[in-house]
Length: 284
Image (tube, rainbow, N blue to C red):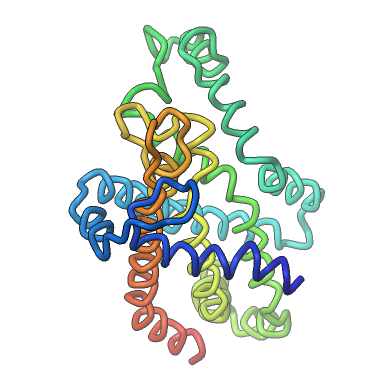
């Protein structure tokens, strides 16, 4: 385990930092030292910042749409009186275990403007007059991918919330009911305050997962059309491994990866004061 972790995690991280200082095409030993030129080019590249903004939008949607919805469903599925709740949990969790690349291909077929299932349904219901190119139009491609990403990651966020809800003692609910608390008051004054510390961990996990979306975008749009769905991982991949580029810029791609990692760290640290205050409120 230590050897695998060192070979496939530690060494790639160290090597990325080292290669970022070279003008290297990924073949042979890097010899052309360029210092900080790659980093300067990344920071001055508008396409990189557009890709970073798209990645950040994925995280915002996951935090403000996926997390609240998952909490709502977790509260419903945590009710012991709900019949078949295990089946519902399984159904919502299944997309998590499915391969993201396969999901991307399936949705590309479903959203195909030429005979795709979704467009056929919309036209038959009279909701649209002509097919919508969901993944081929700059105005619809990114929202469509965000919706798919929420559906794909919904199950794991649901499990996080279910684990958090099961840490609340039933005796606390019973005491609140004896005092006359209704369902809304139980949620507001018992459930939410007691799961706040775990909610902070869930927020960080969801943020990190959604910020690194790659396989879904690569399997559906490859960052197109006209880079409308480009995220930082696909941006890095394009410069390092895209077979259509005649001269790969592996050093530049490593620099982009390092900058992305540092920006992710900064954004995470900026959340620390707010999360610390919320943790204190939840603990109280």
